[in-house]
Length: 83
Image (cartoon, rainbow, N blue to C red; front, side, top):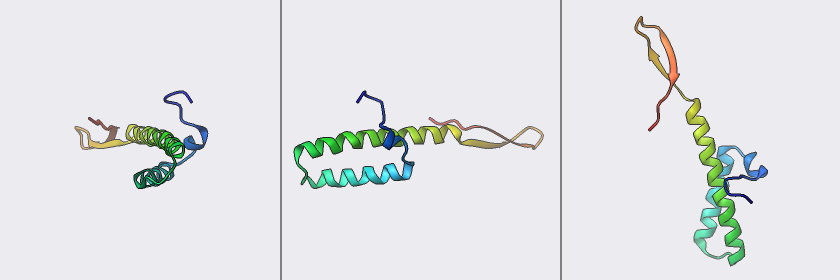
């Protein structure tokens, strides 16, 4: 799998579902009871899930708008600035 490419089954997940699966993977890796090959596969999937979650958060951040008052007191929106 090319770096930066998220498999279709992961791309179809909501942020919440991807995060829940990532948390399960982290928990199982922390236990250390998996066979080496299984742990490597889980780590790779976890990396893809993390990338997917980051992408979802970035997209959400870009959609957030900041509500402001204009000079005449009118309400308007503008893109929020994140640092």
